[in-house]
Image (cartoon, rainbow, N blue to C red; front, side, top):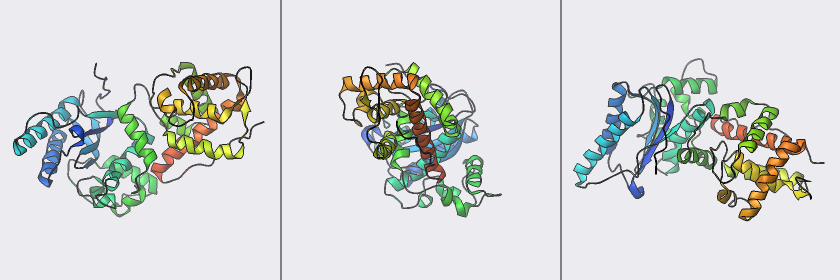
Length: 349
């Protein structure tokens, strides 16, 4: 199989991750982690990458970096090669240590960045190693909670984000925890892990969708319907669990809502959920079936009905757009600590 093209041009930012082969431990001691960080520091000093955030756990690692050269393969390949060679010599083994080459997800929007940093911080909490991210010694959160840290950690961007979130004129390390929530969020984890598995191949719409009016979101969803291939998974902007919960809440207020995409009326909540799971969550037909009680052919029909209704029925298209706006803003609100916005959907006829 051909390798997926990377988009690591100079100046681009990326969420980098890798884990051990068969989920085996790759960092067995403090010395292992120190050596890995020393290798990262060396490529920073060589001017090949900048590191904004990181978390090193027993079985895997996460980095948030900026690429400063043509491609990340040289600096990160060097780091991983140096680490594996030392590790294998130390434990007297040979062969691969990591499951594959590193995974790289472009981070091209403010919204994505504001999700990535808390997720990286929360990894140690999610693993049960600490209860506060700032207490984990092998993560960048511990340094941001102090006045100083390693010289190879580029602090300016994250500190500016914290100042903006808390409306601080100057960065205060003691208030870092206020900007970065310690409780791991399964919705954020799903979205970022999905983006690792299915990275962007085009511009990320997250920022535009957060700021857009429902009318503009409706235009975006209509374009997605026209270009849709219901068989393929696509890039996600919201997790399916969040879509499912929002649909369930709205359905309580109008359980009998139905529209007529073809010759007879059909329950429209199921059609809407199927369509939004495809357009916002990027799910394939088989993945959509895990969220709705439909067979494969019925999912295909629901996707076809969704596309027709988006083009022909203003009430349906308006509901779909307002739902999408609510879900995306709620998703980003999780990172900002702002919670979900309150957009009322119009009732059915």
